[in-house]
Length: 471
Image 1 (cartoon, rainbow, N blue to C red):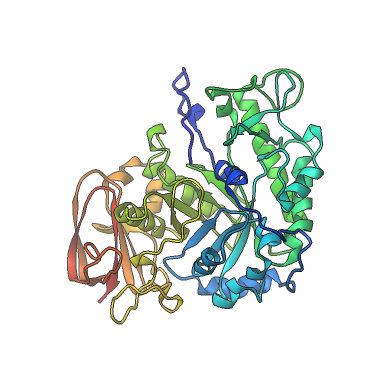
Image 2: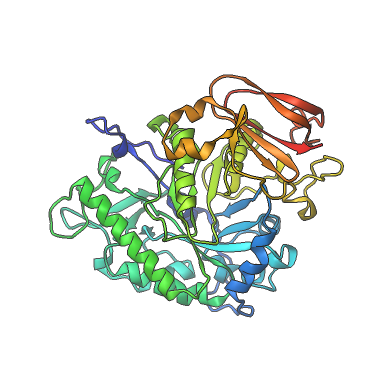
């Protein structure tokens, strides 16, 4: 969920960059989540696995469309986790290391169902819930010192988000020792257990200065260097980035070789953290459009960051909406297919949906959508880069590199071994000649669009996408 951010009086859009990543939803769960008897940090864990061996096994089997799921709950149900095992990449709360170990590791229920699954553990380096009793979080809180917290110009701890019941989360200051303490703690409490492939850090953002523009704001202006003086926007943002990079570098040093490190960038970002991560997530695809973060800008940031990410790359795009908003789901999926990222479509709020769609798995022989691991990755591998559907020599990447906003006026296409994907980010309906005969998916969720017909041209409405099978 992205917060409404007040308009900066000077009209500087960057001050309105209200990127609120996964933190709020995770924090609200403290009120909503049932912590059952036996929820014990000392639970026995399965045997450790080799992260490198796990990745060597998994990545060659992640074909297109590549999918990820976020399960944002301390104690997710067995039903939800069993369904989530169908996805390529699972982002689970770090608390599941303690609460659901039977699903994790090389012999857990997730890998027993889907040997190619990659599991990342979510943790927020930005803020904490005071007195959080969940064991992984509680252990982290026990090692914090007062100097690890972000303060305002009056010396008070900076209150970040108001939770149900009137409890505020307290912000951490990544320019302090916490940038080393946090990865050291996660190494001991989470990563060393060998139950997953890496970590997913919330709040890997470029800016925090927008927090001073919140209304209402319970604090005085931010004081990131604790000298009792409010800091400028430039100082706040540069110090935050520097502290975040220190945390990421220390994570890389402390974690076992091959541990994946992925971050949440919020609505939009650039390649500020290139060389630091395996990738970043776009959260709430186009959720910040009213602030100027449109399709071109979001895809540009996604592509820049992916290009600058470490291998193996895990770039993520999450779209949010109603379960039956098939048009928007396809638009976001096809936008993701223009590059090499993983895609998720989920609810708005706390991420606990396990919705499946026609485009996720298809029997290539019959053309019918079937929910089955055997038919996932049905598009195969890409044949090349995304290009203008009217001119194969014009590449989408060249428009993004030049920051050419006329990308919004074209229909973009990317061909795969067993099909093709089209996306129209513009405001007008476009007719696209395919140059060959293709089949529409024979859908079960959205048969009105996925009607199984054979086509050599298609009409794409504004802000829409379509995935087709090769004939």
